[in-house]
Image 1 (tube, rainbow, N blue to C red):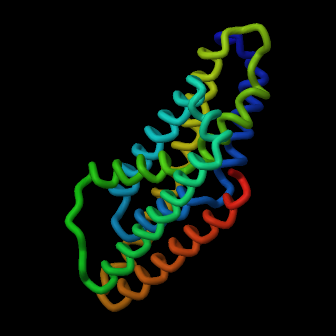
Image 2 (cartoon, rainbow, N blue to C red):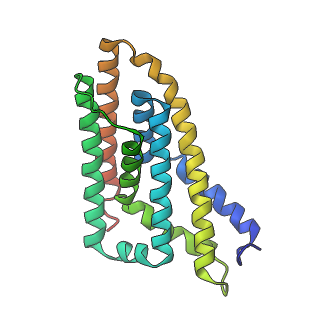
Length: 207
């Protein structure tokens, strides 16, 4: 037992996290675009921002804030449309860079973008509300159990996201030729915009 959590159940939760994280979503698509266009360093900084965002949402869930978001259509839709607009902005930025308008950003910027992307994702809050209770041990203190499960989820997600970055970073050599780079960046921008549309569609009935 760990803080009241059965180790077998903890392993089952980790496996569930793996299955969820390998399912394509906004984080996966954006990390692939960022790593291919900006390189592994930018991608890894984005991963750290995503991990921080997931951890903050998990803490919010432990304090009951995630349940409030899940139960409020207004809060849900504010986050939902904020996330959609943010993804569209990132897609627009990738498209303009294909035309040679390159924004000078540092590692902190990529961290902040990863953080914002997840704080504006209401599905992250719903994950904690919907999934964590089923793995809690009845009768044991809820807060430490929730924090441990959050740490496991963040660790699994970070490992998978880092793998995506390292794999996508190998595409950066394709961007050395300016003409080819423009085509690839525009393609990635369109794909990211499609992810934003998919995100809007997939969350349309959640709130």
